[in-house]
Length: 346
Image 1 (cartoon, rainbow, N blue to C red):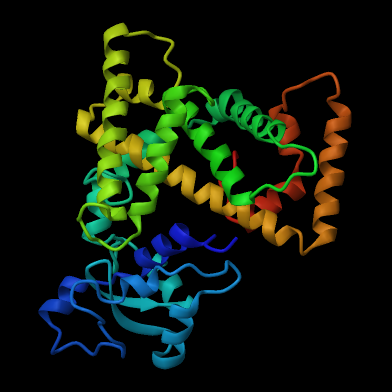
Image 2 (image 1 turned 120 degrees about the horizontal axis):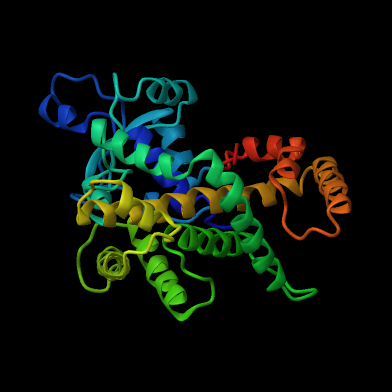
């Protein structure tokens, strides 16, 4: 669990922390900025910020800066002057006023990897339109008839790969599960197929560079991520062209749905698919791993989960697939899911 928060925590913190830096640059002398230091030219304090740390802490970088400057301080991260907030009240205020007083954004280096049409980079009406397209595909009917079945299928695949008395890494297994689920859901890629495994390798390289020092030099994580991005987009584009050539009505995944039901350009579709792979994979896998980690410290919750699941398993002995009604009966399980901010199927 050493670097469990890693990308997930970094992205969340950055999205909360980058508060109108263009204004800060233009009005640096007139603004009452919090204390802090800017570090090295261009790199700032990025290297120290990215050092791995245990999941049960906020890391030495944050601890030292909070101790020295308080919960709100200035720094220089990912090539941008930054105001960092570790204050829960301020962060809540920022989130509640997003789109009004504050505008969520990422540093230019991260935007360059994710793409200018990524939902994680877009703001305003275009972000809303992209989000509506994704939500229209994930209709309640589809959740009941398709996604629940796919979640169970991929869960069983991961569990069946475990060997008795062996040690598994919760985060690696969670990432395997979420990537395979999203790849099938978005592009109908079957787990274990050579093209799926090759895409997974490129995606891992891509993820390592999303939150890294923005150094576009040969051998750096950032340069490798840009190269993997190009490879992934080429793969998605080939899948798009294949769908357009065969023009089948039974393409039952997000890529096929977007091609038939939206007016997005090729570039927009490519960035949309890439951002959905990114968002679905990272948020869910980290939350699953954290749930496993923290649940072991609460035996009573584990026992209640076991009892709830065994009761449903006893009822459906002849039925392999979990039904929507059975899922809705998992009331305590859904409380646990909500506690760790996992996406629900409601």
